Amino acid sequence: MMSNELIWDQVDQYFMEKLIPEDKALKQVLITNRELGIPEIDVSPTQGKLLYLFAKMKGARNVLEIGTLGGYSSIWLARALPESGKVYTLEMEQKYADIAKQNIKQAGCENKVEVIVGKALDTLPLLKERGITPFDFIFIDADKQNNPQYLRWALKLSESGTIIVADNVVRNGEVIDANSKDERVQGIRQFMDIIANEPRIEATSIQTVGTKGYDGFVIGVVK
Ligand SMILES: C[S@@+](CC[C@H](N)C(=O)[O-])C[C@H]1O[C@@H](n2cnc3c(N)ncnc32)[C@H](O)[C@@H]1O
Image 1 (cartoon, rainbow, N blue to C red):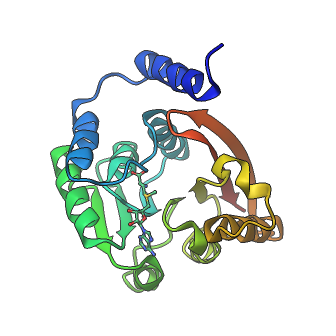
Image 2: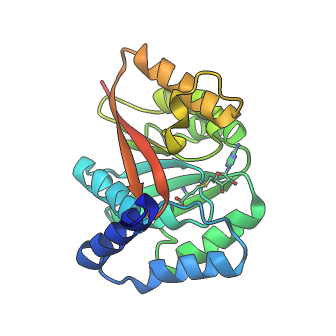
């Protein structure tokens, strides 16, 4: 009997072979990230495609992403948009932002993605001032301890029908540990409490397994 992790990984590989045609640009992003020492905490290919499909289903044109890393998910999202569409992606680390810009250019998405450098809680208020809101799709994937604030911002920067997706809400099941000392787990728990009591959003959560282990995401629609 294979271990759970091994079978999750192999099934993910099988789905990738069947459903995600070999894509040189996206593959190159992962190679570049590894070579430059970027942590391998980007979404998996099947999850990247899920984001792409969600954005397509929505007909998204104006996307906000909190947490760029090397731009892997930004590229998936950008590809779902029409030519005039835009992804604004927020990244705190200058090094990651520079690599992301290079990756995004290499993937031919530079006209559709703007990487904004700085702590998201400092850069989020500037988006409204720039007049580029509301967003129709928001992907929250940065420091999980700040998820409650990111959700509040997402609601401020959205309109009726905006899709909000947040990644890594299961954390190997740790999300149900009310006494967890991990501030990321506590951030997710507070985020869930806000959603539970927030009449402006309808949401659900899906647990996932695959190449990135056992985790999950929340997806919601603003009423
Ligand atoms: C999980 S990674 C993002 C992965 C990316 N969405 C992908 O799937 O390719 C989280 C990123 O958020 C960034 N980050 C962490 N805290 C942040 C903050 N306060 N403001 C902006 N970015 C932050 C980290 O530097 C890291 O690059």
